Image 1: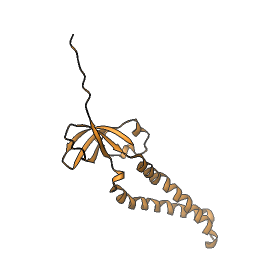
Image 2: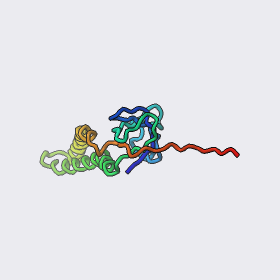
Image 3: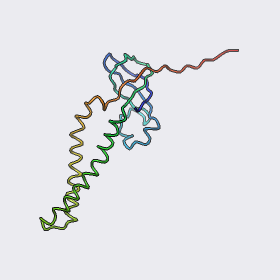
Length: 152
């Protein structure tokens, strides 16, 4: 599970808005610049269901399951490449029946399948974004660390 610390900036009984700071795990992600940015490149606002009754100012831990993230990574980055390759192989195989250059038909079919893969991703985006397993959630409240000063 991926966990991030955050502070609740706004909350109602059903939804909480949590401000998180990008961590080192975000640095290796290719989508880091397009992921829920608010204000600076370091802060993100995440909307989560308010399952543990948090209020504005609470320090919380937000979680995201790893398995769905691996699926999304495959779907967004590997699926188009596989589609391109399959299209090129099919194009090369059917080129003799059209009496055309196999390289040209392979290229055209490869790009056609590549573009089609993005249409499929676009259509699946709406249904996947509604599924609970692809959404962040509140793990627990976290107590802010206070420094204790002793006067001697």
